[in-house]
Amino acid sequence: MPAWNVMSYDALFRSFSLQGAVYIFTDLDRLNFWDLELAARHYRNIRKAGAPALNDPARFKPRFDLLNDLFESGVNSFRVWRPKDRHLVDRFPVFLRTERAHRGPLGDLLHTPDELAAALAAAEVEGFPYTDLMIVEYKAAPLREGLYRKLAIQRIGERMVQWPSVHEGGWKAKSGTLGVAGQELYDEELRSIRDGAYSEAVRPAFDVAEIDYGRADFTTVDGRLEIYEINTNPTIGRVREHPFPVRVESSRLAHEQFAAALAALIPAELPKKIGIGDPILTAQRNRDLYGFVRTRRPR
Image 1 (cartoon, rainbow, N blue to C red):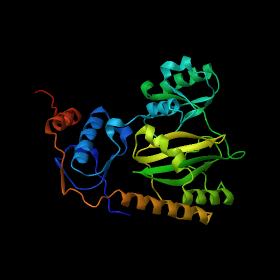
Image 2 (spheres, helix red, strand yellow; image 1 turned 120 degrees about the vertical axis):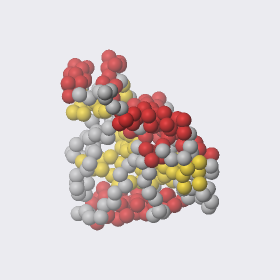
Image 3 (cartoon, rainbow, N blue to C red; image 1 turned 90 degrees about the horizontal axis):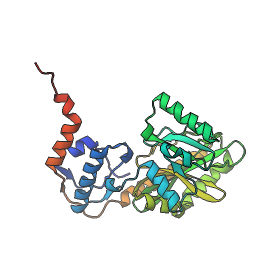
Image 4 (tube, one colour; image 1 turned 120 degrees about the horizontal axis):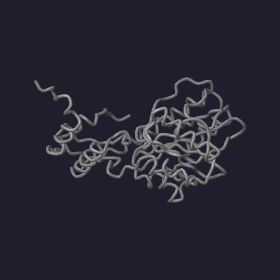
């Protein structure tokens, strides 16, 4: 694995120069408008200096816009709606989720307009911001009775690395259930990671998203790929113990490919220093964000 470190956006925004390196902008869905604008300017300065930078913050699409674009482009077959457009929902079942947080669906599947209206009202009572809610058409299918699978592929520059899947008994398939898939499916997963079975099929989703680094979560329904999200800061933990040893091998192989893809990002030459200072904009952003710390009660 190439040497790497993590730099916070606050540290980036206070810097007037950077070390020559490859820079990957992550967690873009957690940034506010100031942060996205500043990050986009720094991204451009890094690229202008001749250093690689992945994930242009100015091109970032929040979850709703991404899923809508994936539907409009024909990559996905399922739709999304804003709560204000609930009267336009003509496909059921659907479910609610928030746009920004990575918490998965809110509640169960909704099968009628009345159930949808009641779920939206309940979400408001619980305190979920109206502008952060999404209505998502359900699109999943079990591999066999009582078993669902969520597949994953990471993009690192131009390389695609398939990641170990999540298997669960329920349709949400978020965290997985240890050993539930069984030997045959785990063997299939290892072959799929080794061969990059879904790499080129998923690449168009990254192109629509304009994301150079991230993980696409997806599944297959009736032989068609359906993309659920693209996470720009995915977990890259490794499986070291498992009831089925092939699962450990799948994780090892995926991490080996991931490390090779990161190494391939590093060019033969890098600038020693990258000037990224935009002091007027940076100072204004910091005043807006941190001004309350300096505010005192009049005496």
